Image 1 (cartoon, rainbow, N blue to C red):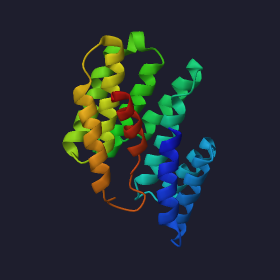
Image 2: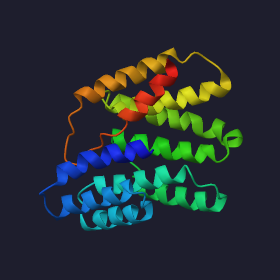
Image 3: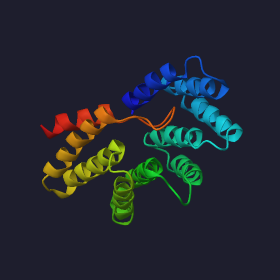
Image 4: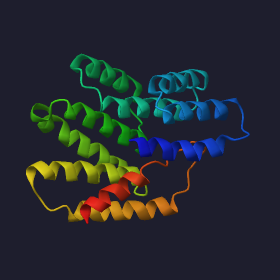
Length: 202
């Protein structure tokens, strides 16, 4: 997740240079996150979201910071509270492809807290969210990576050939090369993760 943070940070700090209050605040929040100050970054994103209610990206990044942090939480009660807050932030309907990826990641974090009991319940929903994200935006590399990684991890326990998943990761890398962010601060993370997973494929 650290490479994800710094990839996002580098792009957006450059993009926000010389911009207005919104861009400056977002750049500061990403710097906080990149320096490991997750709580401060999340709080900053929350403040921006409240001030800029017509923009979806501050809440998106607030949610992303909380999800990445939740994977490392060991205390059961703390993790339950973190996931509750995350689920409250994720829109209930009209999700775009990027939000669907986050919802799948949040469900994956939940699954890791008790895989023996939660896998059967949560796995279909996780796969469905990734597949919906891909269908909505076939050029979203984060959706391809998420589904591929989830299936690769599942097959480590259940067995199975990962050739299809490795091909998806290769396709995702191609999509990164062609990716043109739809707006300032639009998600672009994931390339380093795809490259790392592809090394395991080989």
